[in-house]
Length: 167
Ligand SMILES: CC(C)(COP(=O)(O)OP(=O)(O)OC[C@H]1O[C@@H](n2cnc3c(N)ncnc32)[C@H](O)[C@@H]1OP(=O)(O)O)[C@@H](O)C(=O)NCCC(=O)NCCS
Image 1 (cartoon, protein in one colour):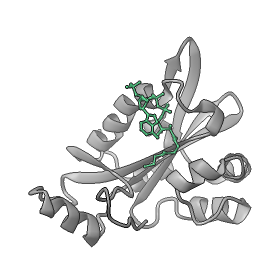
Image 2 (tube, protein in one colour; image 1 turned 90 degrees about the vertical axis):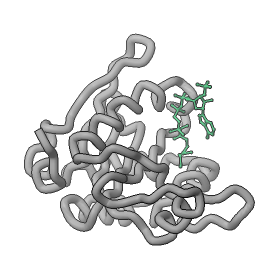
Image 3 (cartoon, protein in one colour; image 1 turned 120 degrees about the horizontal axis):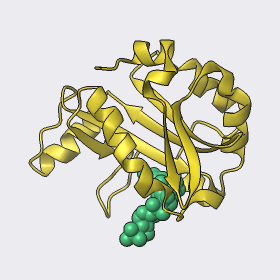
């Protein structure tokens, strides 16, 4: 079934999955309006290094509220990873392409279009990094992109090595 932001917002179960890492089960599901407390805790817990690598507007309840308010508005779709009752990851998709990404890829001879391409940005809680979760998650990321009719995924916030990056 082809998914849209509106369909996912109306019925998050359409895009909900689970995966296992070393026998431990994680749920991968769209963010919902109920998630402010879990998301606040997740953002507040990120270390300075994770915040440097994954930049959000803030790391508190206001920032969480902003991400929740964006559900089914604009061009973004956000998933979380849940371990039991704790949120341990935030996976963001954007179905809009900033001109600077279009220009950057054009310099490498690649023509990005919003019909074929989307962006994704992963962030795991510090104590869940380097445990193989990202690798197990990636097939689900590609599944979401395909369900939205996209055939390519680029990294959100990528840049050219040696040049200043903007986020
Ligand atoms: C990046 C991230 C999502 C990867 O998920 P993960 O579960 O930690 O990754 P995995 O344990 O599945 O490792 C996958 C591979 O990526 C490599 N890797 C992990 N983090 C990396 C990083 N920051 N830079 C380069 N390589 C990295 C691992 O060494 C591993 O390589 P291998 O298969 O050759 O051993 C996670 O580490 C994270 O959230 N980091 C902080 C935020 C961040 O950097 N987000 C990306 C912003 S663009």
